[in-house]
Length: 545
Image (cartoon, rainbow, N blue to C red; front, side):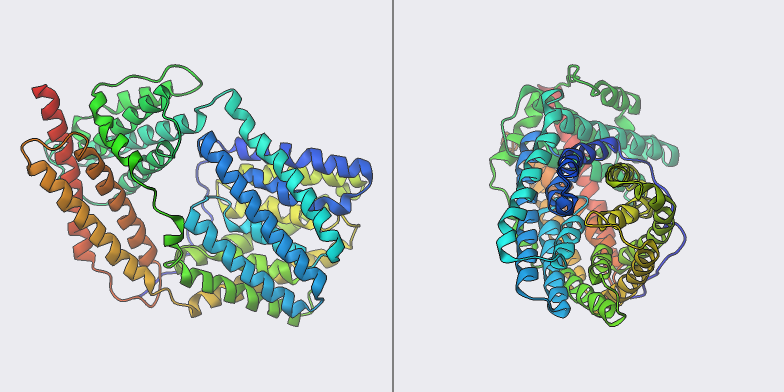
């Protein structure tokens, strides 16, 4: 199948995240005390190890605090494990080829695990950046335990920084996810009323996967993912679940929904005020049933990710080898550049490559402008790095290339913690490694085809059809068992979201067999009609009661 590699729109800026300031502030607060302590002790050369732990503060900001605590602990464990393996390898061999190979294998494992566990942004890139840099840090086996201890200490501080907001707003992440779902549903309802008549909409005849539809369904599923995390369900959480059900109903029956009410509910979720109440408590019976089911183990997702992992390993290794062949002293920059490219398909990988190159080219110009200030002293160097830490997280949600403008000078300045270096050489090596990593990394993605993307579409189609049939059978029963219809509806909605994600991923992958487009359209049409039928059934039951 033909795949377009776009240039227009790749650099377009999006809207900032609702909580863009949280990871930006968190990483500054997590990084500053360890770095300033090392500055006072005159040991900034150890900052790379504390940065490994501090950068864990970038993760899991959208998760409820109980789930965030577990996720951050696993991120820290993964970070320290990668760092430890890299330091041991660095202490055992000085062969750059061997070290690049180890770095590529670590990058592939980190990519697969981050995607399988759905840890979310910034994904494997930060883990790969730290482990790859550590591979080329002078090291002895005797030093490894102390350096790991520094990373663990800084990581424990980062954990506390990320958990601290829960003392003031314990349900903040759940409230934000629910508000986002309500606002996305309101936007979808308004877009539907602008393009179709009320009768057609109420019957669920509209089935085209418009951008508003995809955004709304994804937001609702994200809200359920947040709310259905394991843990005690407080009354606040149950009230938020009712609001997500309202958003779900709006997607199934947009003509019967008032978008102004959805927006009003979303506004009411700001702060710690009372959560708006909605009727029909029995609609949460399905949530109770779903929570009682065993969770799917994350390792089941590793199989479909094998082609992406192979791409990462091959691309990172070849990029590092090419950098070595060109005589660049820091081949891990090329390795990390290649690792940062790999997305769900070739089209997205191409777009990320363009964004990475543009961001790095502008970033080295920023570094050239800032380096005289950073060279005024060690304190100035630390403060410049903190400023770029904040800027990177504040901007990267708008577009990856914009955040890279701050990431690039920050990475260059970090290399100077062990001692000032000649700026011209740093700039040259960074430019060469960026181009090498982007070109070689993309060619590796082209060489390793992902035939499983088509298989995923077939599996998603089967899941949608099975979920729709099960829901239809329950609707056909005179009185479905209490709590049976809602889990079926949730499963069908989730299957439709997975199908759309699978189709979009496969559509951007080259060397694929033709996708079953007619079957996809039919499955989506039938699935959305069945969802609308569950809403009408629910309202009929409420009227009878």
